[in-house]
Image 1 (cartoon, rainbow, N blue to C red):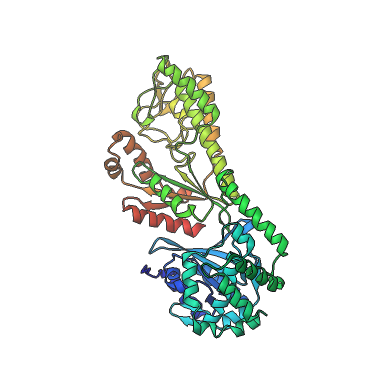
Image 2: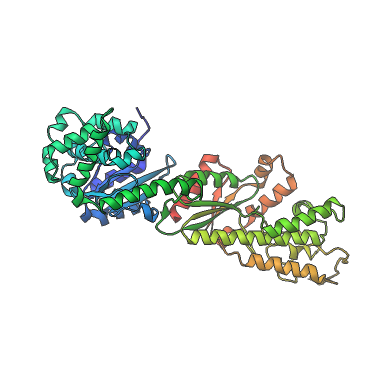
Length: 524
């Protein structure tokens, strides 16, 4: 027996619905209400159409977000809302029905026009309002017959009730409930003899032809409740039965819910040891089962074919000792750089720009896109333009910008670098004079800058701030110089300038993730 605690968000929802007099009930699977209360199962709520506005306003007040299913799975009069229970860290799915739409999972072809009577029969049972057992029993038998006892369902190997469906049927199909179903059947213009046949058809070891006969007779009796003709519904079910596995396994497309407010481009930034990758992966796991989500790494973007080609040639040059390897810029503060280093920087900028293009397009088309690191032009040196600062070098105090105007935001700890074969520029009243500029390297610096200038702020920027000294302790496997430099930059910047939301990353993983999720959910 499930003993999971009732979620606070669900308690608030039910109490508010009762306080504001919303006519609703939890219309199915009431044998397992404890699972619904704990968020393990969906909340399948039937709502009176006249109370739809009030119901949806309550959901919005409690932070629920509406989502849209893929068009092929959308049902008339059925809407989906998701809420985030901060205490438990669980999603709550409200499956809101304004019409009783049911049938085989591949088509849901029937609507039972008894919603008002269904709601009028409901009573309060603990936290939820539930329908009278005779109503729930009749609807359950119809659902299970349409789902499991038609010839097409059995051909598609959908003929057996699941363990939970069997338990629900055994709980409801008892003598007391069976003696009171006639009034409900009369509302649906169904004969008692047909109901008994349907009930028999979903029992274990029922003969095949008895099941087929029950399914065909029930579909004929409900033909006025059908959303589409019977022949068309059969073709649709078989088509979807064939196409859906191909779609998932071959085409690698799995349509999922998209938020009604549209997609969102989210950037998670922070210094080393702040837990960016951990947070991004946790968010992906939380959302991936239900929603259309994509995670991208802008700090280490996927290489384009041009990058693979260029870096391959550069790697060969390094192996042949045509030039030295030039690594982490934070560890080589005094080293000047040559053309190979500039080329790598330019192609890194291009790959980040291409990653940004993909992220922006996916989010515009409804996906939640979460970027691990992000390029913030003119604000943060990490994951930004480096070539212009490598063209310059200054001693002592650094001015705000370098002569080319591309070093804005460069950190004093990094300094500005001169080209190889260039003399150190003389100082003249604080002004910098750079002699004998290399036009090729300057063109590469300009190209890099143009790529970064086209990367705009994300829709939501979340900053994981961590004291540099703590970061050094957490990332003991990496060099102290690099870790401290990256963390110090994030630590000292004023993130209000770029509308960033700061999160204290020194707390536990669970607390940090809860802070991030709370910020993200409010902006979906």
